[in-house]
Length: 344
Picture (cartoon, rainbow, N blue to C red):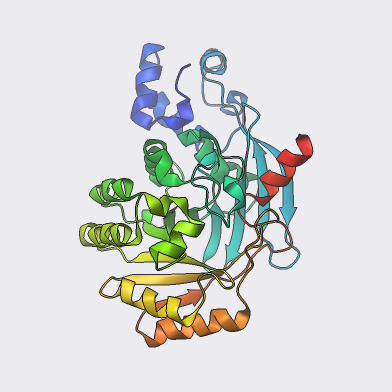
């Protein structure tokens, strides 16, 4: 199967068009149209009809379809369930902040990582998304909502670094001045801790924010809730984070889901302080979103506040993530899971 045009750079599109006997300037026109979120070549009115017909035949656009759309009555968060061209579904969440609108995208259909607290991994990994399928989540969320997107987080369904090459291409495309031109500094990439890929990403020296899903300071606890820790224990992961900071000079954000009776004790906070000593880091405490199939429960507000104070008193920056979309299944993987179960 031919590569999708929207997964190509402007230069690669130019090579395709050259083979079709088209002038070089057509590449810029076509690239710009594809990055506006058009659903068909018929909308590309400044391209010759004959070219549009050939492209439609050889390189179909395959836009995603909205299967479900839920909007929070509390904070305006919008959650989309998109059906892809092969029938698989992924989730995207649009969140509104004072500094702009952030889109949280998925990078895979399902997930192989098996974290105990996450609905995305139930059912395992189905397949990895192509660059255009990630880009489409941003484009069509913007088109459907009518709200301009200024920030992107790769924290939806899937492990971004498990889909390394496609994610890097997506980042290149969405950062392109001829496309959406979203600054790397407005992009956050979340990983559960694939150490070799963290090192590979460090070599790219991208100015994005790396968010590491730590969720526990000890191997015993982390291995219990995150199987990836058995391959890359806490010490190895934090060593990779230090190397990443040395290469990029970018402060690392550590995601920490607060789970009642599992990782929210005073001892956990003190160990976390010890583990992060000397590392330029910010800890994002996340009240756990309850997943039906999981016995894990969120920490109490008092426990979260106590944990945050212990970190801050110890010199580590820590904030509690604002809960958005709690009334619309905004937690990662929940909407897809419900839809899949209903279709079975």
